[in-house]
Amino acid sequence: MKVYKQLVRTFTNSGEMEMPKSGKQKLFYAIMGIIAVCFIMVPCCLLVGYLSYGITLALGDGCADGTLFIIHFIALFSIVFGMNVILNVFYFAGDIPYILPLPISPCKVVAAKFTTAYLSESVMQILILISALVGYYFATGIRWFLLPFALIGTLTLPVAPLAYCGIMCVLVMSFTKLIRKKSHARKLSIVIFLFLLIAALYFVSLLRDIDMMQFTEQLKAGKSSFFYAMNIVFPTNYFFGQMLTRQSLMAFLWYVLVNAGFIGVFLLLAQKLYYRGVIGLGAEGGDKKPRTVAVNMVKAVKVNKPWVAYWKKELKVLFRTPAFFLNCIAVNGLWPVLAYAIYVMQSDSAIFQWFYVSYRIGNEMAQWVVTLLVLGVTVLLTAANSIASSSITREGKQYGFMKYIPLPYETQFHIKAMVSILISAVFVEIYVVILCIALKVSMPAALFYIVVSLLEVVFISYLGLYLDTVNPKLVWDDELNALRGNYNIFFNMAYAMLIAVIFALVLAALYFFTKMPLWILDIIIIVLLLIANKWMIAVCLKKGIKNLEEL
Image (spheres, rainbow, N blue to C red):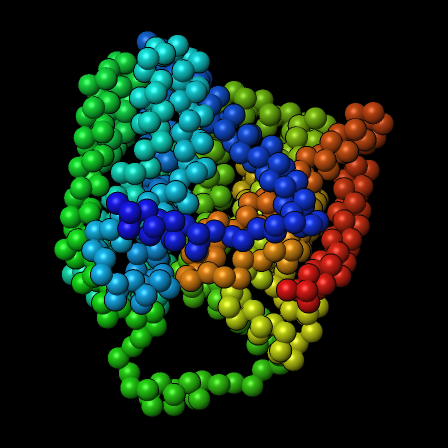
């Protein structure tokens, strides 16, 4: 147990981002932490709690299927993103060469790594699950004696999905040569992402035929095929739901036993197979002889202008690194699918039809809501992909490369920002186009939304780049570790949302107190965004470069 605790402490400390101990940077990060809590964690938790509360009331009789519905979807997402986490932490981490020679059993190493992954990946997930539980509690009035057991269950719900990922990774890495190096992992990540995207699009196409009232009745009667399948895949979720609905301690006991069974199977497999999958594993090894590799590298060398070479370097790092590709690029593909799913599910609803008619007849309030929707969602999508807010962090131990290449800091900053702008804008504009098609927006209005969203993407990209210069996370042993625990990503999203809220309040004050026509307000929005972009770019170049020079 002592060795296990020491390993957990070591792995956790190695993955944490070093924070400023004193001075202005410490105060800056304290303020950013407060902003992050107020504008990300609190709204998200309130939303989930409200959804759980509303669905529970709709189902009635203390049924926990509303809360369980949220839990099942969180478990699915845990599987999708947990595979990449477990694969990197277990097999492609930089600590592997140092651990292998030590007289430590594979079971302890894997248990420590699994605990570290659970602690680092489940914080926000657990807060959301607790919010869902609180919503259920207010809707049903759960017995007080059951609260400690419900809380323990909530804290351990992410364990089973991560154990699934661990079991699959151990088996695949031990008995196949499918993922023997990171280049293979990148290709597999792309295939998985495309498969999930196609599956999501197919699922969305089926949503139009779903009657939500009938779906609710199926939940009440316990005849939902989705629930039936998910209860089999995730029996821990099923027993947790039974504990809440029936207020049964026996169901909680079964929940604990099944969780223990998953962990036991995982650790048993790891004890027998983990080192078999790790030994001989190369980060970028290959079968070609060194001379052949060297000759091919020389032949592949091309003379480019410095800024062109740097541009290609940034794109290749993002697209060829599995962790960066999934977390910075592939994640963007989920938002347009989600937007289309909402449109398909709500296009025939009374609220949507009322809003659609109001917008089409020129109702100013409806047009104002659409403008705010474009402004708000653009900020969220751009900040969430972390392309800009990890620009300096991605350099890692090769940070000195930025100082010695024949390319000014200004040019490097502009290229890093342009990469974020290009990738973010593509996905954001897809969302805008979907919105315009759904509302049958006129061409001038659609052009206005496209321009406004593009200007916001520029602002958020330079903002994220600047924040990453304040205290970049340059010490990491694998690419996923560069993103996990990187508070700059979290703070960038919070800061962007704060600015968006202030901007929306200023616009609302202008609209409601001056009663100016919307076309004038649209011009003011574009002018303000242009001024804000010019100011943000100047701050990023001046203070950002100063921050890098002081590193």
